[in-house]
Image (cartoon, rainbow, N blue to C red; front, side, top):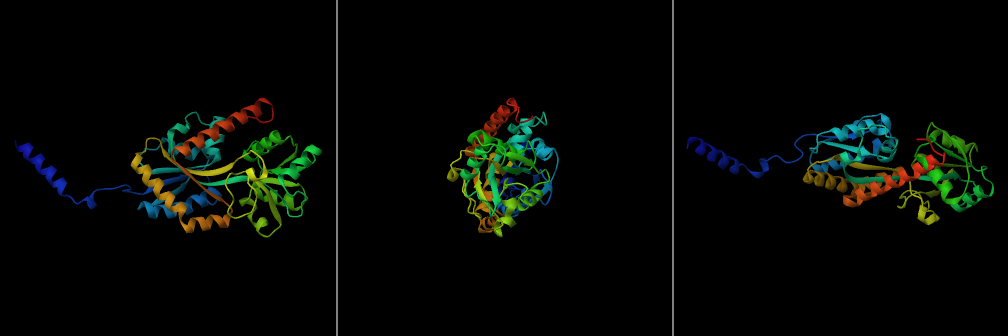
Length: 323
């Protein structure tokens, strides 16, 4: 009887606690893993949208850069984290496509993540010198078909995403380019096009922002289904090519994170995404806002990855690409 009375008293006391005193998510700081180095494009975008999202979430979200394994090291930590809403991660193209396809980590499974929202797209694009005779993608393709191997096109790493985009373009159109690799990134690509070492380059519009803005270079096509808000460059559809590829940023959490917490995180990031501050900021860096969430996001991620896996496997079988 005594224990029963004590238990009843405890229940009454709990019921009398004001609702405002009950703990609500988040109770402590949330960790956001960026699987790339500080100061890069992904890091900058994630930090910007996260600084706005944490105001909506009502708690601090701190960014931690964990490099290595073409993003696998950082994303792997997210996959193995406790699914309690206090660990998030930023996924890019390599996280969703390159690492799984290469089989870089046996324990790396996309099923270990709950995808929350896609924030941006940064599509691959073809860029030429402002004085180039090529006025459209069709002009370029026709020239590369008429004289195979003569049109020089600069990419970054052979076997990387941009190289894959070029191989797909060749397969779709029958064009044949002379491929020149610049592993150092966008800087040597800029030097190459300014010195006429190559005729065109394939990278992102954002990588060539300064040359596009001062009129030194111009874009022929961006392999995207969303119009770039900064540069007036034809999308793939407008250019008449069925080819979409590029990087992106997707916010994710460990699989099994409570649905109500995922909903709060999604709402916070959507409010940040929709803000004039974030939209205006993206327009200054040439990156396309491209929100997607829920089941549509899951379908897009799976279809995109499986489609690219199939294409890359075919290129390996044909001896064009190495796995």
